[in-house]
Length: 326
Image (tube, rainbow, N blue to C red; front, top):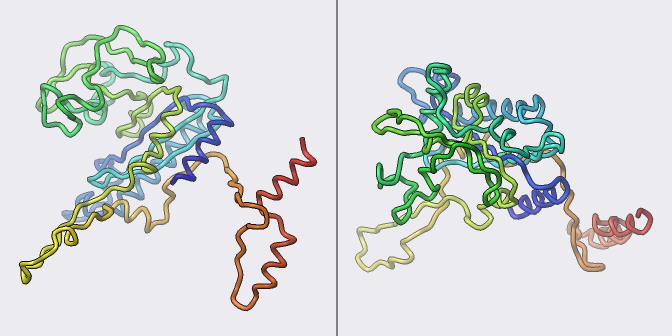
């Protein structure tokens, strides 16, 4: 994970800071998943179908972003796969755009990203998708027990403030246009544009899923992709009890185990990649002089040392290249 993070930073050094941060989350109500169910099966009973459909949708989304150039010409991309506690897979994608496709003005931002409810009379289907997939919470005073609440405040800073026009680059992210409208009832609550997660209308309409699209100009987004370098894997606390013995060690009977949901297990069993990037980054085998790693078979130690003495490692070959190539 740490090496992947360093690879990503090497790409940032080469191609510049990322321009777009896209989060794509699996929708268990996709028709492709529901049509594959048999009898009384539900998506939670078939993690194999859930992850395979998500993988196909992800491949199609990457084709839209990179080959079909929905946001313009992409010079590099990085993505990682994560799994929610309830098991649904989601993907964080960072896109770096070509200089001719850079998002520079407020009009460019509004062209690709919306943080407002669509007009139900103009586009009813998009309105239904946004109200189902792109509404945060609600939380705060309306719902103080929401999962995002920390110390009485929303950790995602919702609800946002109303704003008549988009404001560029505030702490690495723009502040999107959120005009004041009449509240709309969604489920048990009335919501307005302050609760809408930024999205791209075309992608939301095509994929019918939570696809958060953010314009970003900060390297912090790369750190977010690889936050598990510091955070570690999802964990579950387990307590072991032995009724036969009263004198038990409470510390030894408490275990902190890695939590792997069924869809995550199926993702690994299917040998799907947990991350990918547009360019190959070659890591130099860093070592001190005459101290490179040698792989040998028992009884063939001398031959292995002899081979290593005449064979270059990636590091020594790089030093030799620097002598002849400016």
